[in-house]
Length: 531
Image (cartoon, rainbow, N blue to C red; front, side):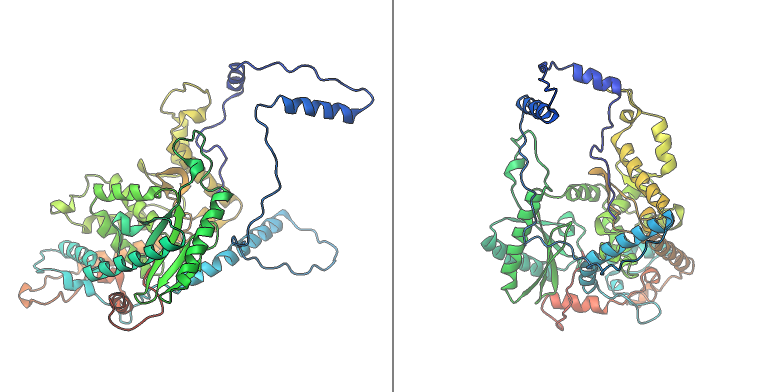
């Protein structure tokens, strides 16, 4: 379910007195009295309408209603069953509301079932065959003369980052695929391609999707225009869909690609490069998404963000709790959550680049988001970094921070981020009142680029995510308590792993797909890519 906000998100309506002063501030031409025909009301109204139309500053022509083109398929819906004439039965308001919620749920599930089924086939199976799973990252651990379990966990986190980072051969394969698809797109639509997503922000992993954006220029939104129309208006969405259809048609003629056009509301297309198994996602846009700059700044501020992101993502991914297709947290939301945590604890952990440990912030994060707070009622903000809930928003609204200069309403005394947090919390409270538990308990992450947007909107498995974090924290703590130093004279890999107690995954399929990407090993039908 999509959160709906008012059309005026950041500014509240002025008071009556302000409205009057505002209107009287501009002189207006006095409209002459219109004639009144005593015996003909219709003639009187027509005369008044004609006079009013002549006094307008800008005439608005109302044209016929625009209908979608065949290239914009409507979401698939189940045809209604034939109705049988029966006497209506009285229904209580509770039954009626329940029936409406069920019908909305059925429609949304019907619309998203195809996309989720397609994405589910692209997931890597991490389920362990043995008790503890596999630990391939231990090959990247250096001399293991560790004096404590915390130091060994830190070394394993660093080794996991190296293991999950694309190799030079994989990077070359990715560049070849991007170059090949760029030539195909240039011949079909002549729009420049830009790399977005994790492979641009620095959070790329070997199985990350290649996100590409068709840079589309919108003349109506040029920098010279004063009043820019919406970038998501119907005309633009039609143009985007036409471009994606043209690109899909061009790629379908190449036997190395398979294509799928995503459904609304987020228009895009998914391509699979068969020889390498790489997944590509194409979208259209006028400029780079706002999250690209934000996540790049977060990573520059906190270099530990990348290894912590890789570790926490695998903790969720190995349990089937990662990605919007799984009704869980997506990469951008997880990166923002980690950045908010590091900002809230700025100075608490020594910088890993200066000899600090990644283990301490990982354990603190898992404890805080596992059992320290209740994410079903508490939101996460990164700008400024904080947790917020109904009580904190109410307290902030009761103590405004700055005096009003233009309006005399209490809403205008609040900062924009507080008004955004209040809107997000209000949406959760209204969902709880209506009995929509999934919406009321979903993950709430405030977008730093748009305070009224919830980055966790796709995550309705908040309770399961917190349980996974709590379980991982418990296992890591137990492994550290039971840690015993190993003999560095052995010269081989570590005999026991602390991080493996939290992951417990099977990396065989992951390794096979990495081999396929560089032209080795067996050929798999499923692509390598989950963003």
